[in-house]
Length: 51
Image (cartoon, rainbow, N blue to C red; front, side, top):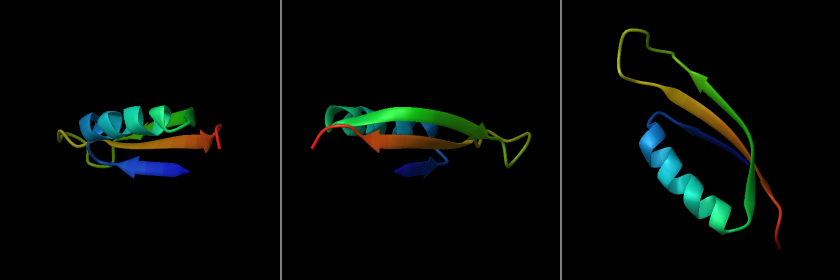
């Protein structure tokens, strides 16, 4: 699964739930699409490891 968010705090909150549900974090890539603002987009890649 690919999860894209513009709020790293809520993405990390949700990531805890995905990890508890059996997903494994594979990759994280931040993007600064709005330079000189507080916005930061982040893309994470997750793989389901448990049935």
